[in-house]
Picture (cartoon, rainbow, N blue to C red):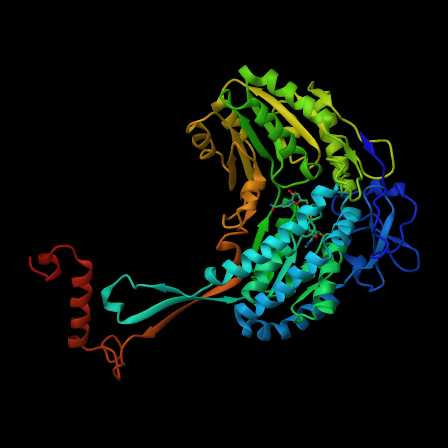
Length: 558
Ligand code: NAD
């Protein structure tokens, strides 16, 4: 079923839309907006490094559901990035000094503001991303929960950690680990979850006491900008949160200026960011791409597994790093699974549903990604796979690709070997679970995965052998991502570092190891100068006593 676009309710927030622009889908590289122009009307090549020196360069932010221009924003050149970072850096000591309760107060005000403006935020999110209402609404839900989670758990994760020295000799000292924030954390985020993958990291950074500057994706900067505007202008919070806009040049400048970088995006850009950060020895955490497998064994509840594959592969139009990207099904249940999945996929409603919660699958946010999806499906078709549903882009303005089911896929196909990042579910028949496991691990990525198996321990046994940072048994990634206490990060080419859990906030800190006297201190210590035979003899006997095993050895007796 097709629902009418374009998305409504955006008038109060952004410039009036213009006519759909067919050139939108002609963008050459993913992650870059088509029209980066100067004010004289001349078109510049998107993303080339010399294009961003002029402060008059702009980016047209478009509505993927119909191609209209929502707003034209200015690109922040490196000099402005440096100014923004320097400004929030000046405010950071005050932010750190107000302590966890002070910071919780301001983040609580942000939570309350979001609750009061959730509908309008969801409208704007839909407009700039092409998401259906349910997917758009998820973003504010996550941010609300993340604020409450981090202001409650963060101080516990960052509390001083007492350490008992391993040797009794040093137990005359108190030892502890103290977590102290990096002054400025930079966050570079992608377009598929414009709030979850930007504020989602900014919140723990702020709770930790960092000032934070975010560079959102040039495709979807508007909702985040609105939130940051509210933080500054309506809430009147301390000047420790800001955004900078642009593409590679702006992001690169942020890497140069900040003390820690959280990057979420493609493997290709992640490597560029890491190389650039090496120049200033800036630590990075990278959340990169994935090609997540789902294994369905003959003991599984086939109906649940088919429903899960449909949701896990097509939620958010399949544009999730943790999406089910490929499915391996044991031969005895393959036909039933594929048929159930076909019925499910064909039932899905695609369209722009405004506030109605009346569509399941939205538009694609990135026109460049749509080209990749198309190419992967055509490659599978040419190689002999059966396209049982969808399999083409919709012939209408905007960036739409039909929910697609591919049966009889194999590992020669791009759709199985590469990250498709769109509304496509390829399914492959395997002889047994071992075969499935071998193929599931046959990938340079290691972000997530899912195992659907029968009752008992088979699911966990298989899950433990999947080479990925997060795996769900008889369920999907939203559960893993929703347990904010669990670290979430990629193995292999899927990244370095984690978000969520204790590590998700400690990464925004440097640890300082402190030792403090437990008792009144003598004027000097036996290990200090001067070295004399008598003093070193004492030291030698003590070390021998502590490290030898058995009394004879400890006392130096033959
Ligand atoms: P991308 O790598 O093209 O862009 C990500 C961000 O980096 C954008 O803000 C972009 O402007 C910026 N950027 C581009 N060039 C840069 C440079 N030279 N220096 C600094 N910053 C630069 O990724 P995308 O297309 O926006 O997002 C899709 C990718 O993100 C997919 O591969 C997906 O799997 C991945 N992703 C990963 C996770 C995760 O948590 N692991 C989550 C969502 C998306």
